[in-house]
Length: 214
Image (cartoon, rainbow, N blue to C red; front, side, top):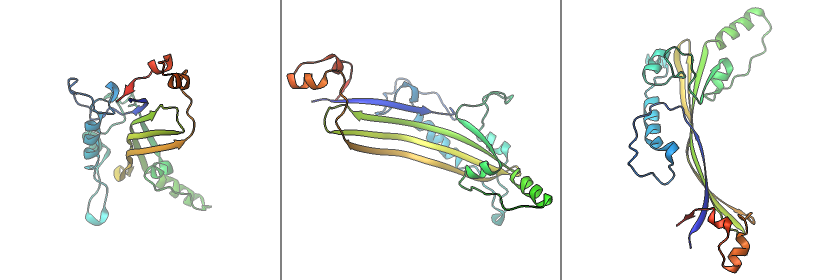
């Protein structure tokens, strides 16, 4: 008996590192036209991101500049005039920039004006960019039983870069691949007259609206 499934997709991309995609190549199991060839593109993005150099004073590494990172392909703008923001990107400053790479900072108890200014100047040296890449599929069975099997599968990543005084201070990839099967005990809400049709052996309009996955 075929298993009836409902699939939903959550796709967000910066469209960085996109290359021509052969439309004649068959779609993978969890691919649709929207995310065709996205896995290969994301792998290129990860490989390139890992070439970004962080500053390391002990090793004499000064860290990549903003220009260096741009030349490697990471930019929050679509146009050369830097007027059109790339989708699914974010710019952060100061403490928010540090928090983006897991370095949340609470301001110390400062009282003197010079201390407050020094702290503000230090935090002002930090600038961050985030690039969001999400390619998720949820497949859920549609049998009207006392269990509901579902699967969340795909990629959910955020690429974050922090510069300090114009040099890359830290860069991290948050998230990663997801393969999360679930089983819930509950009576499902059936499409249309599914229960009656199942008992009588008839084929109802609710079933016809769903595609069988064999």
